[in-house]
Length: 308
Image (cartoon, rainbow, N blue to C red; front, side, top):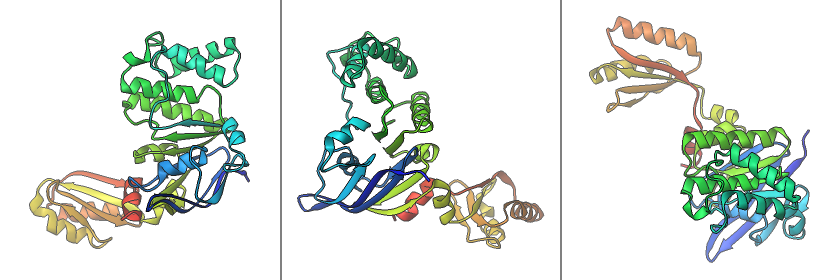
């Protein structure tokens, strides 16, 4: 069994009268990716800042790669990478110069730092802008450069606070692939994100926070299974058939209807059997169907249920 790269027990942090963290418990295994989710103000960024030694907790205990964040902060900083929501790049320097500087800060030799900078400029699609000063970069380009800097070395633990905010789909996929490569090579990744599809794509473990506490912690598949089995979705040709079609679906589970989109959804146990029976019943009633789909619950549905 893998050991734990991240452990937190009863972490608390107050800002005035507000509990940002209120007894946070967290355990993330080595060589896995954990998605930290929650509504705004749930404590995600505060948790990252405490674990990365940028903030001191008011109570509780946490270790990163075996080092205590309160008593061994220098040791923690030697083994982590961090990309916060605000890019930490120097606007006076060019993209290439920034990455070489970060390489030198990570104690790489000059030749190795330059070589690594070229690799990362290509990996993050910044080669053509490598010699432009950062003040001329777009917001998305700055974000990609900031992420590239965290990949200078393969850190044992990488903290990513909303890493793909402001990136287009192609750039998001490049970041996703870079994160997957790090995890395959043994790094542990803790990422906060507002994009639930991102967490579903990348995370081996999903932790949902609310008001500074963990309210759900499991694999994406188990969390999705916990709110029900498969869903049968129908889009009818005519909204006047919604009530009759709802009666047919009610034999399998309580249906949910949306008159504006003419959509019906219902949980089903035996997906293929239910699909065949529903389609035959609809055809017998002369109810036209524009679209039909069988799907598993999504992380969006999990998130809405556990944070309701």
